[in-house]
Image (cartoon, rainbow, N blue to C red; front, side):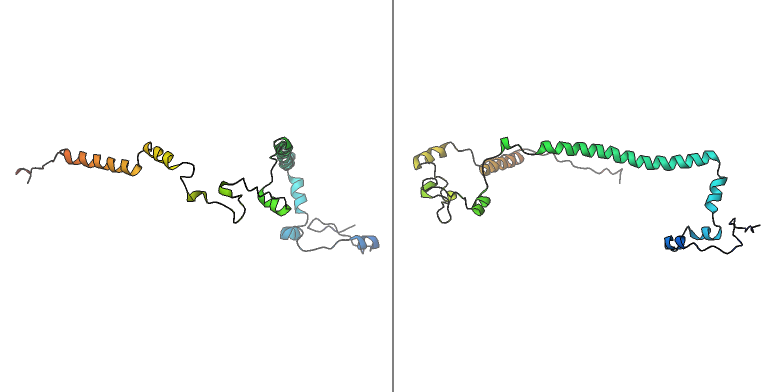
Length: 192
C-alpha cells in the first residue's frame, strides 16, 4: 500500500525509474511555478475548481470565452472598416486625364530642359533670365501715359486719412456745441 501524504500528493515507496527518453526530453525548470501558495499547498487550484459549483464554473468559462471572442469581434469590426477605407484609397489616385502637362522650374533645371524664354517675351527687352530682368515696381505708372494718369487722378477715391480727420472734427464739434447736464448734490442739515 502506498502512503498518503497530507498535501494530497501520492508518493511511491519504490525507487523512481529513470527513463532515459524522459530525461532527454525534459525542459529547463525555472523559478516561479505558481507562487508561494502553490509550493505550500500543491494542487490547490484543482481542489478549488473541483469544489466550485457547476453554475459558477459555467459562468467563469463563459465569461473567459466571451472576453476572448469580444476581442476577436472588435478586431473583425475594425478590420472591416479599415479594409473598406483601404479599398476607397484607389479612387483617390489622381487621374491622368486631369494631369497638368507642366513641370516645375526646379525639375526642368535638374533635367536640363529649362525653357528660359525669348527676347520678345518680357517687358522692355527682358526675358526673365538672371541679369536680364525688369523691376516692375520701379515704375508703378507704367501702363498709363502722363495724360491718362492725370485723368485717373480726378476719379480717385477719397483718402482714408482725410476721412478719419473729418470724423474726428465732427465728434469734437458735437462735444463742444452741446450742453452736458451737471448734477449738484445738496446736503440737508437734517442728514448731517
